[in-house]
Every structure is written in C-alpha cells, then in structure tokens.
Image (tube, rainbow, N blue to C red; front, side):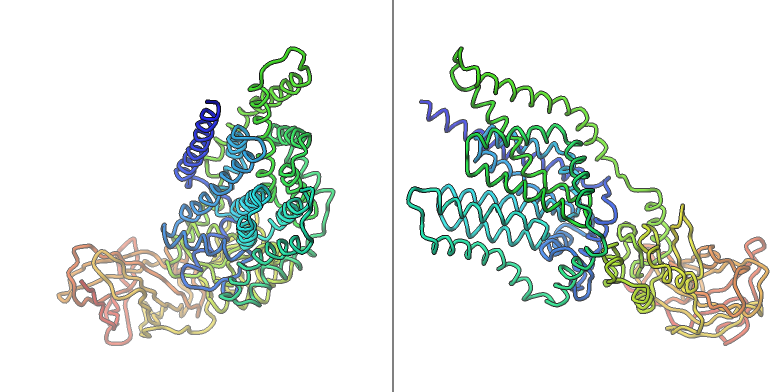
Length: 634
C-alpha cells in the first residue's frame, strides 16, 4: 500500500517537473523581445547571421565562441527566421536541458522534493532568467555540464558504462559551446574514482584506468569531429591562442575576483544560504553524490577566482550547483516532517526548525527577486544604441557593410559587418589581434557605408578613428565620444556602372549612375546611386529629382530630396569633390510591367526652377535622361 503511494508520488513529481519545464519555456518564448543584452549578444547574433549566410566561422568570420554554440544559433536563424528571438529561443531550449538536469540531480541527492525545489530555485534566479533568453553561451554550456554531472551520478549508482560514455560525450559537447565548463571534468572523474573504490573489494586499477580513458576519449571526440570540418589553425588561434594572449593583457587580480564573487553571493543571499545549509546537510550524510556536486561547485569557484578577465555573466556558472544544493534543504525538511514525531527527538526538531528558518528567510527575499524579474521585461537598450541603429538603417541599404564596435547596433539596423570584424572585443584589441592597420585595411577592402564608434572599443585604436575622420565626408555625433562616420570621401573618380557626363547650371557635373538589386518588380523599389562633382563653389541649395517615365513620358514614380537625404546640401560641397548620392524610388503595386526611363536633375525648392543642363544629347534642357532602360518585370 505504501509502495503504491510512493510510486504515485514519484509519478506526480515527474509530471510536476515536466509541467514546470513547459511553463518555463512558454514564459520565456513569450518574452524574447523587449530585451537587449548588449555588446556580447550583438556579436553572437551577428556571427550567427554571417554563418547562416554562408561564411565559415574562424577562417572567415572572427569568433571566440565555441563552434557548437555558433552553429546552434545559426541553425536557429535557418529554422525560425533571421531574428534575435530565433537565436534566443535556441538558448531557452538549452536552458530546459539544464533545468531538468538540475531537478533530476537534486532528486538523486534528496528525493523529489529536492528536485522540484532545485528547479524552482533555478527559475527564480534573475540571472538564469536573463541569460536563458539571451543569445549567450553561458547557460547552454552550463546546462550541458549539469547534464554530464547527472549522467556520471547515474553511472556511479548503476555501474553501467553507457552512462559514463554519455557523460563524457555531453561534457565534450558542452566544451564546444564554451570551454569555461572545463571544471566539470573533475567531478566526473571523481565519480569514476568513487565507483572503483567504494566496495569492500576494490576493482582493478586497469578497470579504473579504462573508465578514465573512456570518458576522456568521449570528451575530446566531439572536438576532433568538429575540427575535421573547420579550419583547424584558424579555430585554434581564435578559441585558444587569442584567449591566452588576451589574458596576459588583463592582469589577474584574484583578490578582486574573490570580492566580486562574494558580492554576487551576497546579492543572491537567500539562495547562497540555502546552498550552504544544503551542503552541510549532505556532508552529514556522507553521500558520494553530494561530495561530487560540492566538488563541482568548489571547482567553479576556484576557476572564477583565477579567471581573467572576469565578467558578470560568468557568475551564472554557480547557479546550477547552488540550486541543486539549495533544493536539498526542502528534501531534508520534507523527510523530517514525514517521520513520526518523537517527543525526545530534540536534534531532529532543531534541524527542522533551522530548515524552516532558512526557507522562510529565502521566501522573504522573493519580493526583491520579483521586482528584479519585472525589470527584465523592459529592454535596457540605451538611447545611443536606438538612435544609432535608426540612423544606420535610414542611411544605408540592405547589402551595405557597416563597421562598428557595437555589433548589436548593426544587427538591430539589419545590416552586416565585414566577417573579419564580427567581433571587435576588448580581448581582440588588447590582445593585439585587431590593430589600427588591420582595421584600416579591412575598411578599405569592404568600403562600408558607415563606421560607427559607439561602445568605446575603437577608442583604443585612435589612429583608425583619425583615419576614419579623414576618409569619410560626414559625421553623426552622439553623447560623449560616440560617432558615426559615413559617406566615403572619394579622392579620385570611382568605378561607375554607367558613366554619363552632363553639367548642371555650369557648376555641377553629373558623372554617372549605378543600379542595384535589378530587375525591378511592381510593388518593389529602384535602388539608384548618382555621382556628382562640384566644379565651383555653390551658394544655393538644390533639390534632386528622380522621375520614372513610361513610354509616353508620363510620370509613374518619383523620389525628390536634397542630396544625401538632405545631410549634404549643395552649398556644403567642396570644389572638385565627388558626391555619392543614393535614392530609393518606390514602385506602385499596380505598375504595369514594361520598359521605363529615368530622368533626373536639380531645382530650387522655393521656386521650382530647374537647373539648365548641358552635355550629351540625353542631357539637354533641364533634365538628364539616364541612358539605360529600366525594365520592370511581372
């Protein structure tokens, strides 16, 4: 009878963990927008988009993230659409693995009350909620590490080598997401050691060595397979060598790291106290499984203390073992409440009161936790990022390159950065992997329409910024030192698709034009670039007209505005300066397919008086007829 009740209780607990995981997915999936992690996430999103577009990671796209993480979020683009939400949903799915693994690991230590409580504690941790819906590698990597620990515990409990093989494989996959989970290998090996030494008749050292070799081989196997499809040299340089050199550029301050870790634990005081008390309870039971989890937590603490540079999101590695240890307090309390009460059992009653007191203390922190969760529903993006993204989106075309030290801005503007500049981090710059000269050379190669110095990283490359000021015609200032440089300054005649000469008003020379994204369709747009040159000083400001005419000379579409969207009026042109002037002419959905012609020219806005045109036959009068016929297809 009791056995049946216990079985039903376990079934209910399993369902409860599944329902909890499902509710977490639904909640996170409905809150993937309205959130901005900042620079790091922007880098990952940009890398994913470039990789999905066909560029190879490491050899073509600069990246310091593990290949499994890169390909996972790139696959999210392919399956779910090229949006930030698609990549973030991939992180949520990884987080579910970690959430379930935390619950099952705690259940292994203290029963289902511990498992469910651990899962709830992890969900309630604000850093977990934040990072589990960001395109960041920390939660996916930690989730795989937790699953590997769980599999090693199952091996310890059953002795089946299959669990050990899966533990090593899972750990190896986690390292392909982020190498920072390497400390998890220590408790996995400890589980092997416990298994071979716990019985009265210890197994042979050969068997121990065999299992250790097995888990190590399975751990490196995913990496070997991955390197077989990647450029090995480029991958090793960016994943290992770059980080080692960058670490030398950031002197280790273990004391400062320890203080920061201490502050993090104080900020999560409720969970920290639960984890400490849960650790003491488990150690009193002398459970090998508990020791393995505790060693894992201590290994993470030690790795963080000696990590350089240490960033806030690295602290999230602690959440998983802390949730497991903290959840065991609920398991201990449930077990003590389930036992028959004995009046003289003072020790058991005292421990129960401590359990209750610590749980109540955690509950008292819930209002502050709830407030922090509410702040996570609001995007913390800055006005600078919003303004810069809007400006770049308005001033550039979809296939334009943008060079920036804040890849999130380029992503929100729906523009790509040159693949070698997908990451412009402090690590790359301080480590000497991105220099002024390299950045200048890449900018000259890709000819980006805009260079945005927004996050302060390019401030470490002053020669490059001075070069950008000299080679770009205009600048968009923001608060502080942030700037966007745009409109390439041509010192010689560029390569023009359709050269055509004409002179307007004796002071402006028309040099030719480019068409982009042809052929054109009804309801689409004509992308047109005009090239002008100032022959003399121009005192007046003129408006450019671009008219699409049918075979009968009737106007079918137009776009009129001052040059460069009004940002570079003709009165600001310098003598002999070449101006690249771009227009997007919208086409009506009901525009009949056929051949059309474009006429262009300039006029004074106040009077409507057009400038006289002199030049080729197509350029007589007050307009210039572009020589190439515009074909609109059905």
